Amino acid sequence: MTRPSIGDQELALLHYLAEHEPASVGEVAAGFGEAHGLARSTVLTMMERLRAKGYLKRRQAQGVYRYSAATGPGEAMRSAVGSFVENTLRGSVSPFVAWMAERGEVSDDELAELQALVKRLKGTRKEK
Image (cartoon, rainbow, N blue to C red; front, side, top):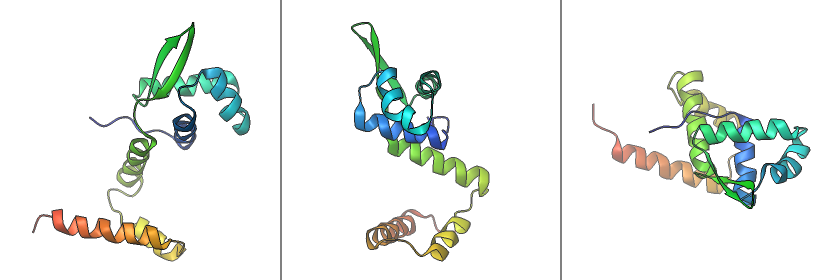
């Protein structure tokens, strides 16, 4: 089952929480929210939305809810990329690959990873 997509700020919060979990809303508001100009209430709203979407879970400990990732930030990133490709690029990855080629800022490691992905795609592609 795919999870609902999330926005850039929600993804950044997930990355922060993955490095600082489990954390209370107050801790995330102080460490993440203040750096991004977000009020505690905004951080709470974001965290509860992420929990409702299935990206976060919470447990009560000593009267305080402590949040942790229900999935890694990688799954959220894949969901965001999938949503972008399907909705913005109408399912075609060619414009994205063209942008990457024009940008020219792909490291050797990233290029090797892309080549491995293309090889894997060729191996799993059905003949037409």
